[in-house]
Length: 247
Image 1 (tube, one colour):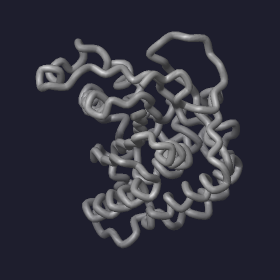
Image 2 (spheres, helix red, strand yellow):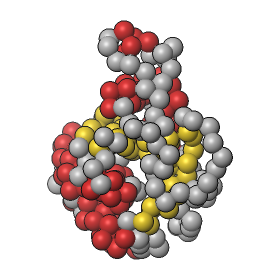
Image 3 (cartoon, rainbow, N blue to C red):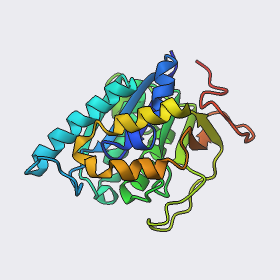
Image 4 (cartoon, helix red, strand yellow):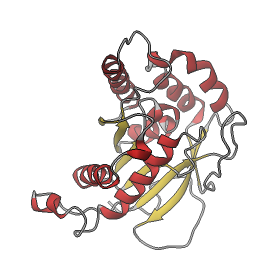
C-alpha cells in the first residue's frame, strides 16, 4: 500500500493547506497520516475555552474530526508550544519526526516550505524546517541510533514536497514561495471538501469566510514544490505526487 505523511504546525493546517490532496489520495486507497506539531493554543479564536489546556483539548478533538472527514488514517498532535516553534529544541523535534517516519514508513512526505506557506506563518516555516531535516535523516542509521537499537529501521522516503501557490496574499508579510512543480487537480468537490474539513475546527469559525475567499483563487487545484527525492533525476512537471514512486 502506498503511504503519505503530512507534517503540519497547527490543527486546521491539514485542511486549509493540504485537505484536497489528502482526501484525494485517501479516496484512492493511499494510507494517509498527519503529524501536527502544536495544539494551536496561541490562536486568537478560542471558542468556549477558558484556558490553554481547554483550548488544546478542543482543537485536538477538532483535528481528529477533520482527519476523519478527510479519510486520514493516522492523526497525531505532538503538543509543542504554539507560536514558539522557532525556539523549540531542534534535535528533539527532528528526532520525534524521524521516529514517526521510521514508524509510518511513508513513500511521500508533504509539509510547508521555509517561506511559511500562503500566510507566511513562522510556525509553518519551522514545521517545514524540522520536517525537511527529518526526511533526510530518517534513512540514515547514524542519526538517532537509539531508535534503531529499540527495533525501528531506517526509512528513506522517496519524495518531499512543499505546499506552495502561484499567488501571494497582499495582507501578509513578504514571502518567497517555492516554485510550482506539481498541480494536483482536486476538482470543485475536493475544494468544498477541504472547506468542510476546515469547518470541523469550530473554534476557528471567524476565519471561515476569509479562508474561502483566499483559497477561492485556486478552487480546483493544490500546488506543490518537489524539494527532494531519494533517487536523483531531472526535474519535470507533475500532476501526481506518486509519479515514479516504487512500492
